[in-house]
Amino acid sequence: MSSAETSAAQSVAGAVEALLLLAEEPMAAVDLAQAVGVPEPVVMECLVELAGFYDRTGRGFELRRVGGGWRYYTREVYADLIAEHVLEGRESRLSHAALETLAVIAYSQPISRARVSAVRGVSVDGVIKTLLARGLIVESGHDPESGAVVFATTRSFLERMGLNHLDDLPPLAPHLPEVEDLEAELSQLTRSDEAQPLTADLTDPSDSQERP
Image 1 (cartoon, rainbow, N blue to C red):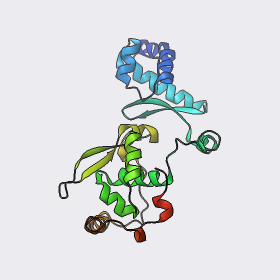
Image 2 (spheres, one colour):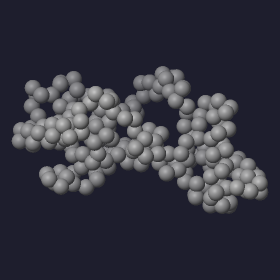
Image 3 (cartoon, rainbow, N blue to C red):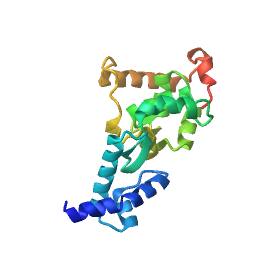
Image 4 (cartoon, rainbow, N blue to C red):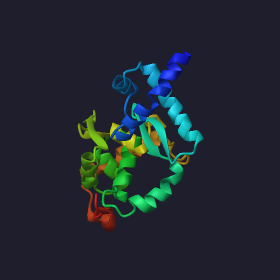
């Protein structure tokens, strides 16, 4: 990139920062470029320079490229501090049951409600409704064998997790069963679940009454 383009990137840095501070979701470089009236490569250089500057100066926030765009996030090193002083006890937090269900869907998508229930061992109707309402999952077609609705995570899920792609999800523990074995077990559990609904004996009372 020429010195003129580098200078242009520096000149729009303030405007780009202002737009990103107001953004409620990641902003694509092309949208930022249109907003500030410069070519997209200029904005891309600006974004990279800003991200590097925040890293070098140890700011409490960072600029990440996630969900197809760019957005500010607090640094991971301060996650415990934020959880303790800002998020702890807030009703808007997801319950443990909802987090478990979301994890199953994230790693096994697209997946049906019955399969999620089989993995968790309890009914997930309530938490599925909560995750849908929060925009973290979405109906993603039907299972080719059973015809059941299957669910997948959304772009909002990636944004909240600070990820750019599902491939960025951390790998599962190496001691977990092989995918083929897990699929076979899930299929067996699902068939059993469809043949006979979950009973009180199969459900942990404390878990079944968890708030979504």
